Image 1: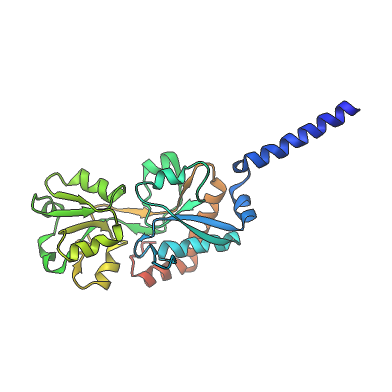
Image 2: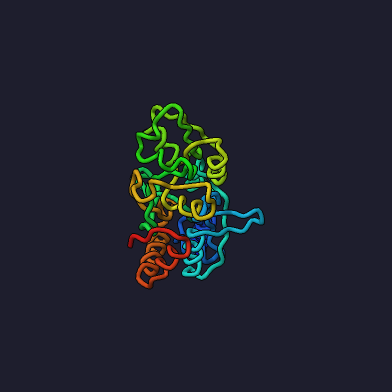
Length: 265
């Protein structure tokens, strides 16, 4: 009898130890709710999807999506700074840095091979920003691909990848701070910024020096979604449910209207 009791106690202790030492074995949603907050990775440099003010406050289209997800979970929200060059590593980091990443993240097959991506909640596509006075000069990709044209991109993301793959003649300038590139173009330090149709309208509306002449004819077509590590299928299902509900009840369209973005659903 004593042997049986000791064996049971040992088994129980081992089970408890396993759960404590391996928290990721528990459902993601359970862990988030026990913690009491959703931890969201975001770059904070991508108006109007994710922007971090000097005060530390975040705002934007993606930020409001994240807040809806936290609301569904019934928890608070905490934003964690990430960057485009380190995004994949941060999503897959051990120990885990945040639960999901949001804000201008394009859904790609490459990302889906190693991570989970939600359904799309925002249509996007590569386009350009240039000075208003130069708008008539850039009417095609060929117009950009000339040695005298200085094309500025942020490092580590799909904008840099697009420029390297499609512009063999242009002078490509990699600039660290994405949020400063439009002003660099406006002030003449570059001629063109490779950007997205999700980002370009905000700058055109807020800086009369800038234009997006190819806004309605983007070079690529895609969608933006929520990114997270594999093994969090329960969280992915909840995120997709939130997105579907926002499409159904009209709140996603209202969010598009609020930020002046194209609604494609």
